[in-house]
Image (cartoon, rainbow, N blue to C red; front, side):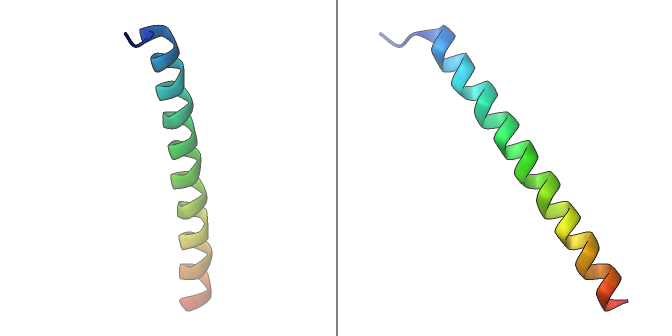
Length: 37
């Protein structure tokens, strides 16, 4: 039986990590666009 509380914690951490990665990618893309244009 899976502990739902720990599963929720893992999901929270995972979601936060993904959000951070997307933000960093967005910033990198902005920098590249500024250099290109």
